[in-house]
Length: 99
Ligand SMILES: [Zn+2]
Image 1 (cartoon, rainbow, N blue to C red):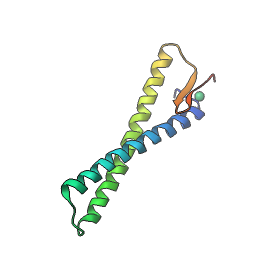
Image 2 (cartoon, rainbow, N blue to C red):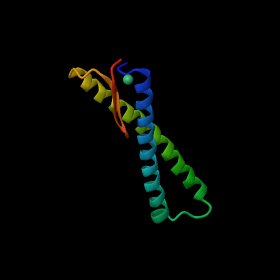
Image 3 (cartoon, rainbow, N blue to C red):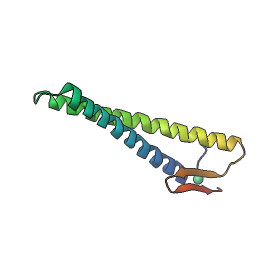
Image 4 (cartoon, helix red, strand yellow):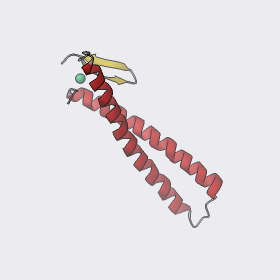
């Protein structure tokens, strides 16, 4: 919508990194809560591991969509202020170019 194909790909890649990171952080938190508080028995450990993996997957997906949405909204705000050049802020700095 607002980006060229290259910037859509960059925004998606950035959103995916943020999503995976958020998923990993939440899953690690859940895993330590299970380990320290629930003290899982050998019988139940498979179920807990499944729960941690499901959490990782769900949070990563949700956070990816959320951060992609945030990037789009930010991009829209820039465009509305007349800074219409195409670009996505990446870990390496802002990549900006005209179409
Ligand atoms: Zn672009």
